[in-house]
Length: 504
Image (cartoon, rainbow, N blue to C red):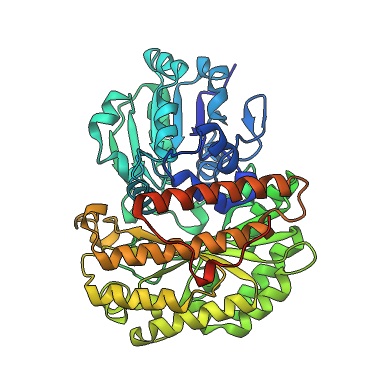
């Protein structure tokens, strides 16, 4: 007998991205001149499975799995390509989504820039729902429940939801509501088409379960919520909660016991772990990293902030001493620059610069960049263009900042504004709205990224037996994108900073 509840995600999410989480951002790109099979090989190869059960799964899916198991449900997480083995006995299928229609900032930006169709994240979500075995199971009464960070997008596409037989969408932190919804699904009860989790239903620390099975690339949460309050972000609407060390250690052990040797610690700002303010708590942050390094060989962060880095140069040095060794030469994180304009910072993200003043934002970013460079922290940075409050002078200031960051080993990704958080009622920014200054900013970021992508690739797979093969393949991919960008926008990408050829 199979499980009554199955959990899964589409192929772009059920991958460990060659054990390099940030390669997963490649799934937000649309199909282009690179064949689909080749692109999948590069960016989201299939995860290893045992009888169709993935050895790792997305962290959010593992949280729901743990909650359901804790409440006594018969539940199994299955690879999307092996659902047919388990659907006969299933009453409900839970699907984890990140960006099901490519409406997220990265996906929507890349699709419009490259002037092609929907991104891989959207394409494979649709392919999952259209699997013949899933269509047949729906006819037998299978209930489909969708949740995850991208659930909000389904609320914008009710016809798609009806056409594809989705019975319920849960938007928000689901630990306190998921059991009653799945219980109704397997017992034939009525399901809400859209369930938006109220802030009052957010789980407390004691109500958030520890994962039972390993997560993709060893990712584990150390906290939820954010104190920065940026208007364009939905995470800031949630309460801030930091996990105690005991809770973190349990999830470390789950991953390590499965053979995982690398971990990504996840929070909206890892450097603020345990802090009740915007000033890093040195003792708590160092203890966190000592705990992690006790269990694993390599460590990265999901996110941090420029202001926290700039406020704690000595702490970054101490963390680097813990992380950097003969097993690890550098570590990564995602960091939001968002703009180079102090005026725009004042309007939409005044707390993002704390403990500094908004007028100092460009200097804060440059200071943080220097600290990261000195300590081998290599970030993927984001910019937002097209914010409703953005003026031409704001774009000029951002261009000037990018010029100053040309020697900063990083990726800087410009994103079109997507209405989320406190700005969810504003209009989307589109490619057609771009002015000459915004195009100039886009081109400068593209030049920066093409150069530094080639440099970063040299160390990305260092020490792996397949490093030369994959490095060559990624180098070829970057060259293809370089040529495509030049053909679309007539961009002269060979600038002074790009004259150095990078060996594969």
